Amino acid sequence: MTDTNWAFAQYENVRARLPSSQAHGACKRVPNLGALAGNFDVILLDAYGVLNVGNTPIAGAPERVAALQAMGKRCFVLTNGASFPASNRLPKYRQYGFNFTADDVISSRDALGAHLATLPPCRWAAMAPKGASFEGLTRFDLLEDAPDPYENAEGFLLLGSQIWNDERQARLVETLRRCPRPVLVGNPDLVAPYEHGFNLQPGLYAHRLADATGLEPLFFGKPFAGMFAEARRRYGNVRPERVLMVGDTLHTDILGGAAAGIKTLLIADHGMFRGADLRPYIEKSGIAPDFIAPSI
Image 1: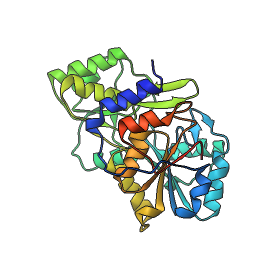
Image 2: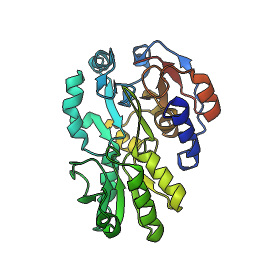
Image 3: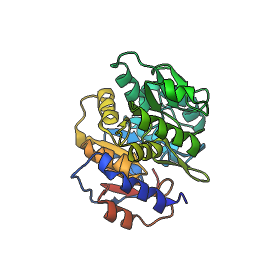
Image 4: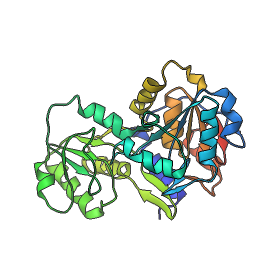
């Protein structure tokens, strides 16, 4: 059952593959992000569970971001979405009521694309939804039920799990056991919060793949360093203590921000931990945010 306890356990099970951090925040309770605005110049915002849940904007989130922008704060979205370019998300964010520019949206796909640009030509096959874009990446064959894309690929990209299933996972595992090849993961999330509950994400299948084959995938996105390095490139010379990562997940947003040396705010009411007591999860994981708020 994909509830909070189950999702948390999955992240704890793969902890050895995640970044480490010695930072331990004070878990100071604040009413909302607005209460912290004076302390920070740059705000890095997770999307799912912070700005929206599934396809529904969180009440008050567009107004909060607009108020921060009016104060001169740089607000960026850091999303572990890899099936489509970050620019494709702008119309949806604007439909939700957010006024982000293309430069304000940083996706794990950007980090993956930068890495692919350094590699020699290769025939890739991808876990991805139908119609997934090649923009900023490389051409790839879509992994579905036909065996040829699995057999002919020289490497695999895990971008989106919308059409993935256990049978396709088993085929990929069997293919890699027979002939190991690189696996690059464009979305390291294990789950994402939707209106009905949690949806399984490519990161979950990537870790299962690693457990089954002994191969170690290469991950792009939160909590890994490349995502935060790209954010630093965009916001420039701002002291780390003036940068805040806002997210709903301990093992991606909070751990990633802490490992990057910036402050963190955990949103409690809309994403990973909605309806749950945070204390046992913080104590068991040892991942403690600097601040906790019910919503932004």
